[in-house]
Structure formats: C-alpha cells, structure tokens
Length: 504
Ligand code: BES
Ligand code: MN
Ligand code: ZN
Image 1: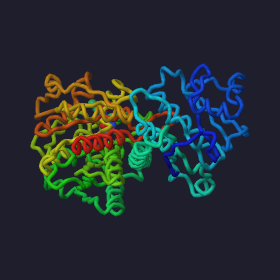
Image 2: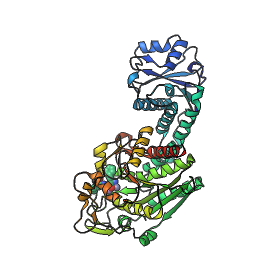
Image 3: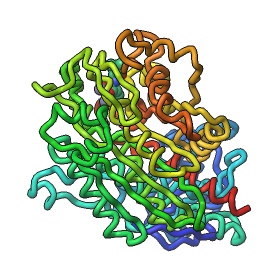
Image 4: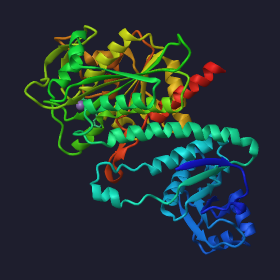
C-alpha cells in the first residue's frame, strides 16, 4: 500500500473512491457538503431515503454520481458531531479501511482527516488514519497451505491519500504519515511473531529473527546469550524455567545506538515465553492455545526496535528478550523448589505458572549490570489478574519513577495505546514473604498484578524502571483471535516524545 498527503477539492479527485464523513442525523461534513452540492443533491437524497444517517462506523458506497471525477463516493458515518472525539475518529477510520479493502477501486482520497477532532492536529489525524488502515490490512497467512496462499486474492486498493484542508498543513500531515508507517512496520512485526504458533516461534526462532533485523538494518547489532553463558552468570531463575523444556533458552540482545554519543540508552525488556503451559502447576486446557501469545512482551521489543530502525530515530536504544518455554517435565520446577537468581536473591517457586517474573528478574539484573540505562521499561503478559482489572482498553503500568510513568501514559494517550497506572506501594511486598527463601514467586489471592510487579521491583530498585502488564492488551480472543501489536505504538511514541523533548 502506498500513502500520500494532499490538499485538494473532493469533486476534482480523479480516483477510484473519494471518502467523506456524514454526522449523525444526516449532517454533511464540509467535504460531503461540497460533493452534495456539485452532484445536485445526490448525498441528500440518499440520506432522505434512509440509507445513511451518519451512525458511527457505518459506510455506504455510491456509484456514478454526476459532475465528480471519482468512480465512487464513500459515505462514512461519524456519529454525533459534538461527540466526535479521538475514539470516534479512530472508529470511523477503521470502518473506512475495512470498506476500502472490499471495493474494486485501486486508489482513494480520504477527507476524514479534515474533520475537527478536539485538540488534535492534522498530523495526528493522518497518523491515526494510517495506523488504523495498516492495522486493518494486516493479514496473517503464512501458516496457510500452499494452495490457499496461491489462491488468495489481495485487495485491489493500492493507494490512499489523506486530505488536509490547507497546503500549509502538508508538512505536518507528512510527518504524521512517516511516523505512522514506521510504527505500523513495528506493529505488524510484533503481530506476526505473536500469531506464529509455539512449535514454529521458539526461543531459537526469535533469536534468528533478531539476526534478521540486524541484517536488514546494519545499524542494529544483535547478540544472543546461550544457556551455558547464563549458567556462568548465575541466572538460576531463568534457567529453572527453561529446564523443563527441550528448547534451549535464549537471552536476545539488540542494540540500536543511533543517538548522541554518551547519551544513556533507553532499555526495553520483553517477556519472550514462547509457550506457557504452566509447568507442573499446569494450566486448564480451555484457551491454552492462547499461551503461544506469552511472548508478546518480547514481540513488542522486536517491534519497537524495528520501528526505531525503520524511522532511523536518533536515540540509543537497547532491546532485551529473555526467551523460554514453560512446560511440565521431570526436570521442570516443582512447587516449593528454591532457586537462586543472578542478583543473589533466592526465590521459592510456589507456583511454577508464575514463570514470567522468573525469567524477567534475571534479564533485569543482567541489564542493570551491563548498561548504565537512562530508563528500563519491561513489557510482559504477566498476569491473568491484569486482564480482570483492566480488560482490553489499557495495559497495567507500574513504575518507581513518576516522570517515567507520566511519559509512558501520555505516549499511550497520544497514540491510542493506553496504559493505566497501578500502585507499587511497599505494603504489597509483604504478600511475597516466604518462610524459606528471600521471596516467594506468588502473593496470595489478592492484587495479583501488583504483587507480580512488586516482585520485579525487587530487582530494579537501582534503576528508573517501569513495567507494562500487557496480558489483556497484547492479543484478542474469540472470533477475531490475533495479536494486536500492543504496546509497540506506546513505546515508539514514547521514544518520539523523548527525542522531541531533548531536541527542543
Ligand atoms: N502468562 C501468564 C499470564 C496470563 C494468563 C496472561 C492468562 C494472559 C492470560 C502467566 O505466566 C501466569 O500464568 N500467571 C499466573 C500467575 C499466578 C500463578 C500467580 C496467573 O495469572 O494466573
Ligand atoms: Mn504462567
Ligand atoms: Zn506466562
């Protein structure tokens, strides 16, 4: 797909489709009004017949309208004009992309990016529309058989232009477009890694994907720590999880040092559990297939690295992905086992299904010993409790630094990949007491995502650190099952904001 930003009049566009907005109670947007006028009231008469009343997310394609150059005019319902906020804009943009995918035209000019969204610039609108379109066009087909792949027909739409009201809006629109395209590459990459099944996407496979990134982007360097090195480093927590699996664990490190020399790196760490059966504390069978998504935190690190390289961001960025499987086995962790982490802290493994924190704690200690990081942010599908607390609208956000928490939360709001802060108070540490070891790997039945974050906090006290629990946001269940690519958008927006603030 090719994208452009332009400024021009809707009736003069010589394209397959022109997209204009209609507000609830049949109110035309400016662009729809112009088309209605030049066609002698064609839109008005369609609305009077009751085929389009402006309900948010509805679409209607009109053919053969007089006096316009476009083959089709697509009406997109935008809901009530006074309620047309960021959420409504994204919804209308997504509906547009779905409808454009289904038409026969090769190109389209979209005027939704001219609509007023309170407090949002034209750059923001172009960026959001591009991200929404790219999200709709993502299609995971690589595990279909050869015949199915050969017979699949791509959508005919090839070019989309977003219109901005004035020529002076073009630079902002183009900046939004460029940022969106870089982010979309990262999001799609993370979604693909998430959607790949556990028998293909193993720790070794992920290490190979890092190598692939390094080949594609010469400024990106990668190295992989093998189990023997982890052994030497004393990563007893990470290795205890991997012991129950035939797939060797990997600690994947990616460096993209493209910022000013001497600037402390931003470090992203992601849980790369390529399949989580729970281990001896085995999970129930229902929906266990979804535990292939337990590497989505790691996938978001890959996605953010990819986007940063794609956008050539002037920043020093490090990505670290501890990767393992968690399976039942004679050599697996048993409830009550005590392991010694790289930090020296001993851990009583009361539940072998709380494995994410075991692999992350050693990765976080390793980061602390190997980098003088500006900030460390980890992403993990860490707790079912976070899904209960926040559902799909927001990732759980925990931090020992309020400026960092604010920056991440603002970035999420800006890009539409939100996070909501939860407490990391010391009171919660009491829930992790063990009678035999320094700490237990689970708390009681209450505050599950907070105790998980509090466990990680024991290993990140000396760093400016944040943790995003993406258990409810990284993938969707049900009929539309699939990875979402979250929180790649939040992470890359955080980097963009950080660069803009530094350079201002
Ligand atoms: N990967 C899971 C968390 C998870 C479960 C994410 C379901 C999304 C949906 C994690 O490793 C896990 O099993 N956590 C346990 C922790 C518990 C044993 C304290 C959980 O949430 O049940
Ligand atoms: Mn688990
Ligand atoms: Zn897990």
